[in-house]
Image 1 (spheres, rainbow, N blue to C red):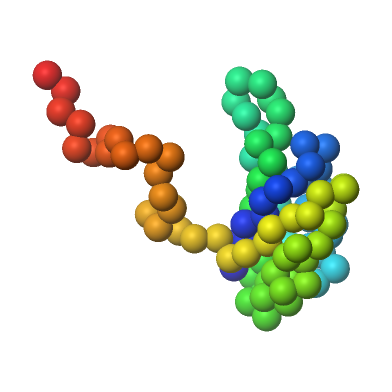
Image 2 (spheres, rainbow, N blue to C red):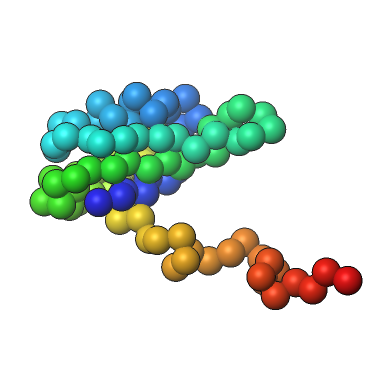
Length: 97
């Protein structure tokens, strides 16, 4: 299961996420999303866990918990095609003249 983590401290690393989620089971991958231009954390990340039961336990226990001084939001990640876009611009419908 892919897990979305938001409201992360800018000091939280991918390794930090891995250590926190490993308390609930094996972590396949962990990634804090970084801003391409600044190299600074965007304040959210993803953790992948193969064991669904462990992933649900982690979500239930870690949502609204504190990590590095911030109350984090933890929930099941939605597939890309279900996420809202940040604007109404649809790249696929844009006509290039």
